[in-house]
Amino acid sequence: MFKKLRPYLLVFALVASTMSCFAQFTENKKWKALFAVGINYPTTDGFVKSTYAQPVNFPTINIGLQHMLKRQYGVRLDFGYNRFENDEDSPEFKINYSRINAQFVYDPTEYIGFLPDNIHVAAHAGPGFSFTKPLSDLGDNKQSYLNVMFGGEVHYAINRKVSVYTDVSYIYGLTSLDDYDPVLDGLGAFNGSVLNVTFGLSVSLSGCQYCD
Image 1 (cartoon, rainbow, N blue to C red):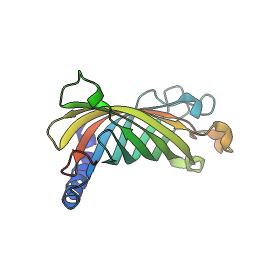
Image 2: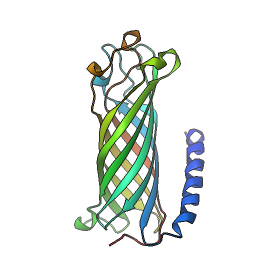
Image 3: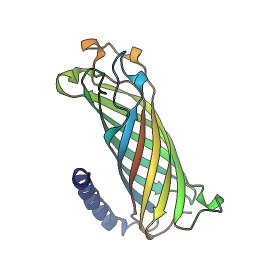
């Protein structure tokens, strides 16, 4: 598992290091870089009849940049990549699912009195765009459609700059199977929603805790 994740972790470390240098010139704002890896489950209603994916698929990769406007709320732009493939009793396929979302972030931690100081929670939601592309000779079944993403996170601070976190998110596809003309009987096409569970790192790129 570590060998599979190592290239992604190295890329994230390089990006975070570069952005940290840039952040030295923007100390009056709170910026965070987020990187997470995990698993995904695509809903069965996104596939044509008799075609469905495995209930647990790997990898899911999320990369984001977040700016807190106030102590409790901020904005985030993030990109996600998922791979899923057919279950044992389904026709064979593999699909790349990508998305980009602009989200509102809300942190209610200070209103939850029982949480330790090094733990905080956050909710996020916002619109975006999804891209699906089957692999091999099913590539003509690629689709794109609008989505709405919403989820929740729990962060554990290692120090003032770095925290580890887990995120559970649902990307609801604003689409249906009737929105396209299937090629090859629709095999490998996906017009639906995806549930993600990820674990990752959040790295602060600025010196202040928030902006008022």
